[in-house]
Image (cartoon, rainbow, N blue to C red):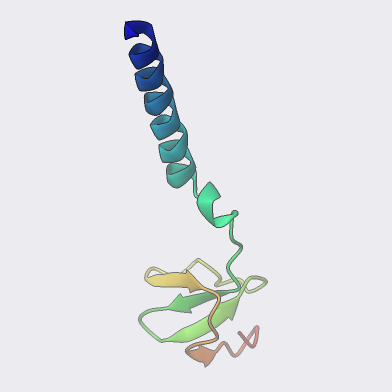
Length: 75
């Protein structure tokens, strides 16, 4: 009986560790590839082929078509 409780605790701990590793690596979202980078300062939208995609000081990734399209890539 004591051995069963110990095994259950070990299984529970291992399960928690596996779940936490998936959360920390982003695997729970299926390694999502975002379509756009939105420059927060100018509200300009860049697509993944643009030189400014992810390369401005302030911004965020999204799949929503928000903001003004970039004049270079068309966002």
